[in-house]
Length: 500
Image (cartoon, rainbow, N blue to C red; front, side):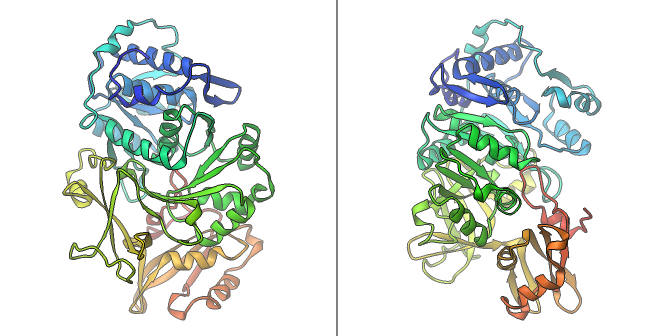
């Protein structure tokens, strides 16, 4: 690539790839590292030739396609800040993001061009394929100077699981540190090939892009998880060495596809983050593919991506743990008085994270930033204990504890029990205000099929395995749970009276 400013994360991510090695594979298209670098430079130069301002926020409205990858890297390469729109975004959220970021232009995939035109009053749209014939001066790239600590590379907007979208401000340095940590513990090399089904607008999906480019590896792009058997065909036929998913990804694969019965000879690891996969599913996954290493990871968008991981060889010894902090992530579990919990005790505290992967806070939202980012640290809202060896065990999110008949009940404990039933694909447990109980325990369950199990059967199943105070007052069967673009369950919508 042109330029020498390797503080620019877009430059450093593409530095390791060998010219003729495949960087991106999408349908019948294979893009080598040589071609990817050239196309990123061409689009970055085109932006700079059009009155592009340093730090300018540029929208990306696209699926996991080569167009997204090239546009994302080009915006950052040009000294701008990429703002990906999450899949399935509604018009109100789109307009709010455009307004709050003072966005002037959007790079838009052809399939979304009509929507962007209708919603983007006054926006300059750069449709897919419009810069392929441009030949702007590549010397424009030499003028781009980046401060990796203060310049933003991307603003990652949450998909509204807790209300209106919040934009997490991620710097070049944040990405560099977190990427280096993940590459190290996964032992990624140029021989690796990941199937990327998680959207790149989500921090976990973006981390797959960052880490595999950084290692000179290959990325198989998948735009949708709508047809999971076809995803599995890609995983096998492309000889992928890695696959990553959130809990719902694995729950659907294990209970609703042939995943457990298939063989994937090239596969060497699974990554799982984005919430807790219930214990029964972890056991099913490992039993189905015992030779594939399972990396259980913990992180937050506000920490770029990852904060900790549990080494696969410790999974049995430390079952239920999220591991310990990464090299650039200093994790503590603090009680309400600010003191660390005692290792090996039953004391519970909040996970607090420091380090160079902690982002700059929320875009133009000082109130929310002050709530979660204090003294250079991120207060995660996750409650945990620490064992005698320093390994962290999440108890639950503070919001997900239910106060029922004077007891503090963990939603995840009930979800684990429900997950053990063979006919349950997904579940979400919440507390519903109740005059008698304080909060009544409601469990929302997606079964294999409506005829596969009844609410009464599941209540009896819970009664046999839980004390009375933890048995749901109601079990509601649904065809689907409300999920955001990354496949994470949005309990806030259930609390607000979700109607499928």
